[in-house]
Length: 394
Image (tube, rainbow, N blue to C red; front, side, top):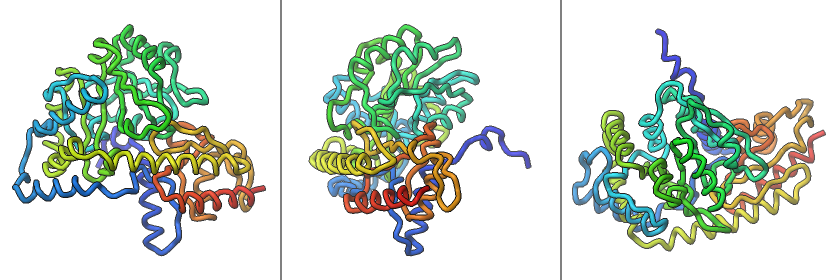
């Protein structure tokens, strides 16, 4: 049987693969320190769990409208207005099975075969694959040491085939955060060119040294061109609940809703009702998680920057650090040369039972990504192992 060429061209997620490997090794009794996690290591807040139980008890276990229950779409619209002065009607909101599904819907609704999508590099591993799955063409632009694309770079990358730009702030894998001025300049470029902006804001509550600015809040014209993507996973430790959402111009929302109605029907009904409580209930746990991540961020960066051979920039958001391993590329481990991030990650896991994500998966082979969604104890222990591994190289 001949399989789909498109399906065969899709590369499985490296982060999910390594996370699964770490879980399997731990199950075998091996003391693995995993810096690969893309999810908070906190429990879902009790009030949200109780809301899910209530939804079950009250029989909210049936199909919902494809774009989500009206109460949740109203709660999302209320949050966006209160936090970012963004006014959307419930009809502009589409609730999906996680923010990844929301991104899939956005590309499916926007792209025709051959349409180009600009993706700043380093990028989240899934972006190019999602573009390809919708018959689009990823166009990568290299960023500077701040890991942020400039308006000038974006403008230079635009062609007659350009349909959209992916903007991720705070970013995965870099934790970089765009300023208001940077976003304003990018918005001007997008408006002038008439291209869509897919603004992935899933880490908007995990920001430490400044405030989050949504590009959609910078004027009516850019708002009309923006598909704002967010969800409940990172802010409320609800990764397994699979609730994401988009806010966009009505015609885009209608196209995404129609697509989803056939592809997946609706997001989980119980999780939707729990998400209403997440958005409208007490928010104290959000601050507690953010404060804990902030402390871990500073600890991890200090340890990295005090270890010979590696370094990192201090991220402004999310819970990731891109660790520069340029100083050890070309060195040998047991006679094997470290040629890049894949070699480094494989040898580190083999020798020191410590897992990191190769930067090659993000378009940045000089780096590896470390998540600080792990305990401070494991951060210290893991960096001791990494330091020992580097000292063993020759």
